Length: 265
Length: 162
Ligand SMILES: Cc1cc2nc3c(=O)[nH]c(=O)nc-3n(C[C@H](O)[C@H](O)[C@H](O)COP(=O)(O)OP(=O)(O)OC[C@H]3O[C@@H](n4cnc5c(N)ncnc54)[C@H](O)[C@@H]3O)c2cc1C
Image (cartoon, rainbow over all chains, first blue to last red; front, side, top):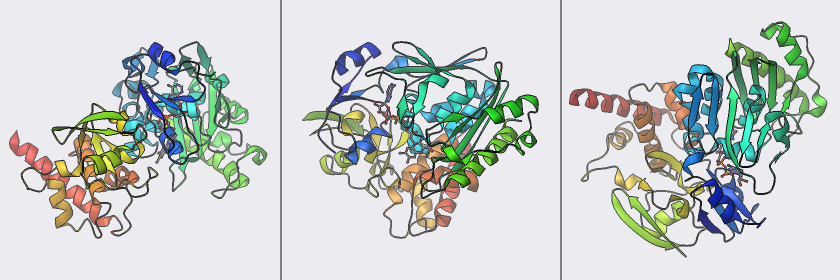
């Protein structure tokens, strides 16, 4: 790892101030992505601004069916939140299958979505729920937030402060684990929301997380795994790598979507 | 150089280090507690698992400065006055180790698991909770047995105390 200077922020304002105008510094949350990247010398920030001790970024609140999760909330806390489970168990189950227990104790929802790994779980959850990402500057709907591989709508220095969504009528998530990394080789999140059915796919698309309009229409008229049987998944936009080729992933998208609907029932 | 102060196994300890020093190196090299191991060095294997503020974490993927001010428990802090912790005793009893390299991380993971979910562990739960710990010798079978035995014994101990 290259040398770096560490700074601990006490508030969001403090973090912005510490970062200043340098584009060589980086925010640090759980470090479960960033520290590994730095160890491999794939990132070499001059300064690290640690957000982990900012009280305002932590914790979960559920008011009626409105769920708000602070950006600094670790995966383990989302997985075990009884308040969230009461209205939206699918997101708890999703969080509970990220990596391993130790990763879930450190890794945060804010870090995960800011990083937008094409095989990460939360992007599918947020896009499937039609969630809103709140930053220190504005609110961004999930459809506009995730813009490509490791790309988001975040501007230089912008901090994710929370994620918020209206609990759906039903939701489910099914993931086919990469057996080594546990990231999603394909993961599908389905939700029956007030605004209609939403289906979001991670781990499969060569452009990162995406919605599947064909599945959404089919499930809108018939909320059942059978509704998906006759719908083709186009392999042309799928990732292909040593783990699975594009056709295999296209097939996984359908299988995982069916399982997600079953999980939601 | 930054001064890092931790409460380690109940004692306040400090050391100076570069901001880029990993917590596991700080624990091994600055505090001379070598029970915590470096295995894969890529957050996969879990040989470096310790507890930070009561939760299991992989100390190879945390900077020492990130941990500054926290309370740490390492494998050295588990046994009271030379007596094995019930999880350590169960690993011995059930042959939960062969070469022993992964054992400190396995034991710290098992203790964390029992702290969080004690009394409700099943083979399936233990296997999924061991997701972040790799053992190349045992095939996991005896590790799972040891964790279940320790869980049962600790639950019985809690009941007796009530
Ligand atoms: C062994 C292992 C297995 C894993 N398995 C999975 C898995 O199965 N599924 C999955 O989805 N993920 C998995 N992960 C990744 C994990 O979920 C990470 O927690 C997550 O990717 C990053 O979160 P973090 O808080 O650690 O962020 P960090 O590593 O601290 O930061 C990541 C990036 O986000 C930026 N950032 C952090 N916080 C903010 C913020 N509040 N605002 C703006 N930018 C911010 C940082 O500058 C950095 O660029 C795994 C990781 C490991 C090590």
